[in-house]
Image (cartoon, rainbow, N blue to C red; front, top):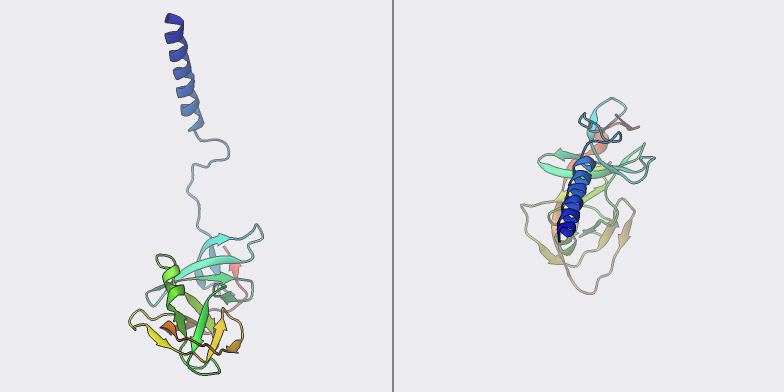
Length: 181
């Protein structure tokens, strides 16, 4: 019985030592706080803070910044800022003219995360969901996927959409090439 108690306390002591020593900083850990990486344009104007990188080559990387009260996350390559893949915008015209509209279901799927952003004409305008407008149900005439070309669509059922609004023309604000610092 005494051997069992002795073994229990030795095991407990060894376990506590292991936990205590493993929580001490190792050589790989640092005592200094990390510096936030940021993306700057060719004029050294800060675009935003780096959110993450896909691979060690930092291509593409993501930045976040606020424009007119809207939090925006964009992909950055050396030569341009891009919206996220998978974003679709619908238009009332057949040539993707006017304000874009976003699928209500797409907005709801991303709820609680960064807002839906589309980069499109004129220039490199960033469009976001207009929170002040109500959803509409209509038959769109054209669609643009991410920053791709305009496509004519022929939908058989109306789609529930939320109006978008242009918040900034990125070409007027930032000048490529971009770099990390």
